[in-house]
Amino acid sequence: MAVADILLVDDDDAVRLVVAQALRRAGHQVRTATCLADLDRELRTKLPDALVTDVVLPDGDGIDHATRIVAEHGDLPVVVLSARNTLTTAVRANEAGAYDYLPKPFDLDTLTRTVAAALARRGGEVAPANDDADASLPLIGRSPSMQEVYRIIARVVSNDLTVLVSGESGTGKELVARAIHDLGARRHAPFIAINMAAIPRDLIEAELFGHERGAFTGAAQRTAGRFEQANGGTLFLDEIGDMPREAQTRLLRVLQSGEFTTVGGSRAIQANVRIVAATNRDLLAAVAEGAFREDLFYRLNVVPIALPALRERRDDVAELARHFLDRAAEAGLPRKTLDPAAVSVLEAHDWPGNVRELENLMRRLAALSRDDRISVADIRGAMGGGAAPALLPSALDLDEAVLAMIEHLARTEPRTLDDGTLHARLVAAVERPMIEAMLRRHGGNQLRAARAIGLNRNTLRKRLDLLGIDPDASAITAL
Image (tube, rainbow, N blue to C red; front, side, top):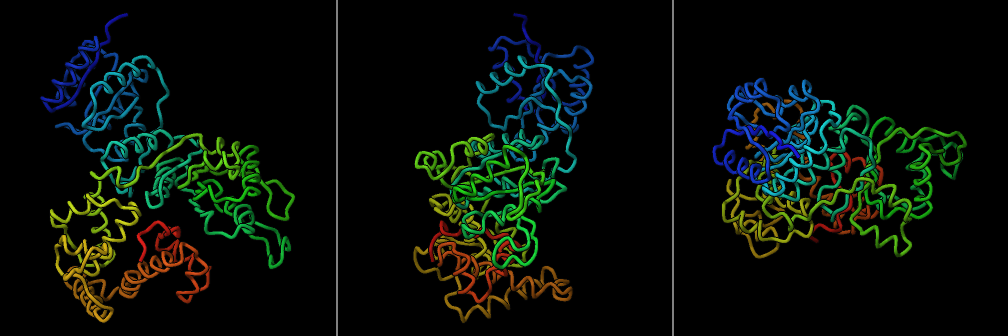
């Protein structure tokens, strides 16, 4: 077997040395470059068998450069290395036509295996570029488990394969579904989400497939279901494990035939949607118990994505917490920072409610903590671990909190006091925690929560959608 010629591009002397040594030990010949100009010069001298390149280089972006190289030399496998371990980096590398993306720090054995596999599969198809990649996508984390999630997402955005996202409540399953939609070819079409656990069993089929006038008592007019509403886009089936068996049968027929009929209708309608499903249950166990159809499970589990619990990626907690504090400030709450000791407390917590619990805690601290810097006492008090002097102690201080928010806006964004958004900002700051508290109190039951709040169920559902609240709040730390 001929020795492969590998071109390695990285401006970090230590990385370049270590990677080159590993590739040479694997039996390859290695040429190195420190910048894009050197890379181009080496390409003109001799086209390598594979290119391994960093993203951030002194004279430009390695991924942008790789896009041009792959366009000119379509059979040249490219492996991208990057310390910018974000979903967007993984997607950009995939869409540039790279064979694979490895986040730094990486295992050298993994690198050599990846390069060997890339050499063995020269001549693969190049994915089309996506100029709309959004660096602000709300998937946060640099842990190895999240890097694997990013890599799978990057590989599925360019196709319509059905995806099954699994993970505990609060891990961000809908965020994954939205990322797949927003980065894919269907991003300009609707993204429609439906939570199976929040819909009465006898209404699920009508919700999914729509109904004709007179199909059942109260059906005064034809209504389009979620499949029709999502036409051309993505349909997100959340908590698919709670779907009744009879509805599972109809869904299976749609996935098999690509068409459906409304309840009470006879005309076949084409189902032009991408399906992303999610569950916090063990579906294989549900199959064994007879609660979930085995054939439907395999139809949905084409591309599985397992989201880790927050306690399994504690290294991401600090970054997530700061991100949520920034979002709270953007929503009009006072801007707060975290004391280093407070970060340690957050990282030590087990987070039974996962990322959602952390987000709620940060919003609560942003609204109620008196000081600009959130302390250990603040966090322990907010978690129920003891009194927190820095937190507002009673409902009587809500007036002070509102006044403090207005004063903060007057200092930081004075235009918001005159642009007609003040009411919406203040109401949102109070409404979200109120709704989440009532959902927790009533175990995620929207009907009972709506009655407790004084809203009808449809109005509550609209507010949930508008505020981006996951109605399955039963796993959030109880009141």
